Image (tube, rainbow, N blue to C red):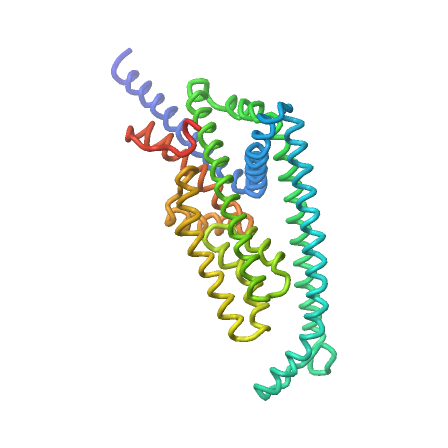
Length: 351
């Protein structure tokens, strides 16, 4: 083979290598686009993983103490949660219905007082000044809100059912995921999945402890201030604490609205109450709990909430903290330690 033939062969091999790289790049781009199209399903799957981690965190003590199998322990946890949530829904639902009736009576008087104080005339839907388009717009918003509620309820049911399946046999699904990877990377990926799962379990325990304490403090505080329905306010404040950073603000909104109708002094004391609860949570409860569980840098969590919220909307905001926990563990373990070779402590490792 002379020089020209060797040059032609090398050029042909170079073209093949270039074409292969182009095809691989296009395949990666198409795969990323596909993931983007099914991002809602991926987020729902991750919600099922979070539910499974919570169920396992609650079922393992029952399994160890009673000797029951994993299936029966999960059934006991599911029954207990159903009874707890059902009782809370009945209690809070009755209180909310009573409060809505009171609000329906007080709202016309409040609107009349506002008109007299500001010297304005606020039109109502029954007056001729309100165009039918306004009613249609309001009806459209109500219908849209109803659709969102139905969609959220359906997603919640799917996440809970999927979480029970995942919690019943997590090893089965973990092995299924690992088989999609090259054999040389399966052990490394499995170790990272174990660490991230343990970190997620520890974070859920820490978050549950914080939510319970915040809910109790909010309930007792609003009861001492004389606000109506302190149990419902405490329950809402505790549940809102699941959303990082902004949850403490959102949890105070119903109490502040009720305090606003009671007068200026009550509003000030209610604001001071929730400010004190937020300070106790951030400076006393979470540092103590996270010292034994999982600690995330506040700035990292803040930017993660913004980024995940922009990508996935409100469902992403609700799941931003557990997503950050898993990503934090994977980055520290797979990249910082194993790729860069820097020693670092990985949350959930050795748990």
